[in-house]
Length: 267
Image 1 (cartoon, rainbow, N blue to C red):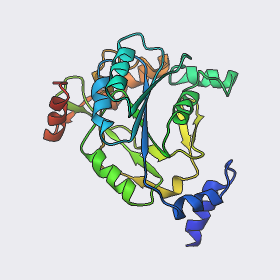
Image 2: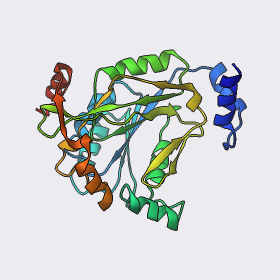
Image 3: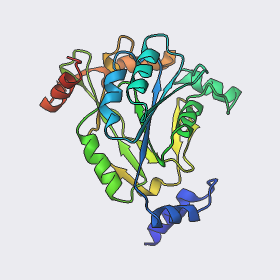
Image 4: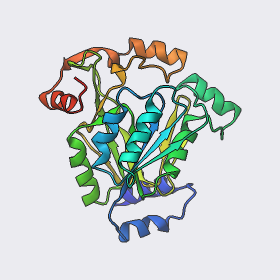
């Protein structure tokens, strides 16, 4: 028990919030309504399937377009018109630095720059209406396990959920050799913000000690099926990723994943 409380103390120490707020959140549970935010920059290939796959599981979808030059904005507008009570569309007018050295270089020049990946993420979080936020990307398509994950999240007092997905190989017949990393993608909005680390961003929240690590894949990651899967990376990161095992062909797709790809008209 002492170890538990020490972990809690170390988690909340030095944060810019009142510790009694955590007790209030836990002792006054309310229905967990979820806003999903979707950052979009040239995601026309899988954007519509991505949004439709998650729509029925969340209470709000906040689409934030960042200077897309393809048809992403038109797709987002169509979806917002189709679901006016659920989908809200915003535009973020600042060019975001590439993931890697360019992002860190911008941070060194100005830690509060609106061109940082962390600033963009925090801006998106602040546009969400509900108390819980799910970070969702325009190249992620929900698998059936997302429903199981959300059931656990809503039933128990978890405040953060780490999830991961399966990378789909560009031949649409295999997985990539490695899954995505498990990251805290669903979390309570209060006092949550993204910090800049050298390559990208890191979520900071005082609720990390109430975290669920969900051990089944909740989405298909379609990044490596795009025409240009590395467009968001700095030059050195592009070269590294091309050699990375994550990009290589892995096992054959499971029947569940094949059915999901067909359901959304991808194959």
